Length: 343
Image (cartoon, rainbow, N blue to C red; front, top):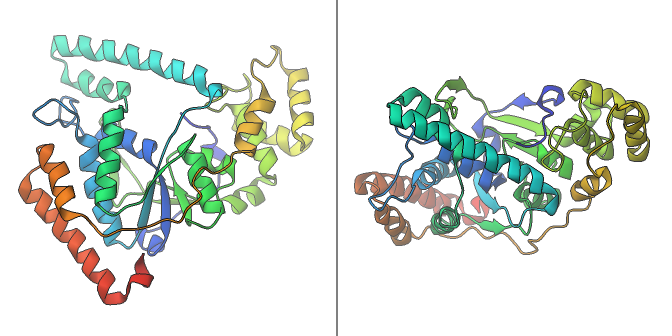
């Protein structure tokens, strides 16, 4: 779900060329969910190999990253680790919602209602261990660095950006801002339109959100931004404080400034006592420490390994070769311009 602060966050559209030569830490789970929910057949069924294993994510990763590499973008994928205990309630809510969606999908399937099947099919997606393992294997074979976070992937990506190891984090969620990411990229795709989980196509443009600009525009500091997020609701306290929307919550944090004063005020005016420990949630965003301490290494594409992974999953050999040809052209360009200019 992520923190719901999109209405008040300043952002600007950029082109893919603005990201040329920049290292971008991509929230892997966020990206995999996009592929698993949108790369589907007409009845909502995901792409699968002849063994019945889902392959939508492999298709998305292969072709999306070919496009990014061709544009000179240097992707790094950051995978989630163990979710914090604070997230247990949100994870349970998601499990229940997926169970309901699956029941509705099965009911629509029995009635042959393809429209409803498409509507509900992407709502009970689960990222399995196999999906994660296969995704990591393909990315590494393509020479793309993979980082395993000890906790939240967007937190790790944010710390990588703050340390200067990457230029930005890429995610559809705004949570990275709460970890102080200097640059957040949304809609990292070359497509001008995207299909939503319900099958509707909408316009899409790459967006850049700059952390300092957010603070300047909202006239708050990082601690106030975290408090604002907690008030409207995060994955650690879904729903936030009842009756406080984004704009009203902004007014509260601007007026009371300091975390203790903010939540003392909210506790006084709320008709119901706060049902979450704001200090623990604040600490989760404020005190995250990076798990990755090494240097990022972009390796040469392992053509044979890429071929094997995709052929084992029933990808068309012609399409594999076409994609590998494009990757080969990227490698050749790197040689011609000098390794240092690229990776």
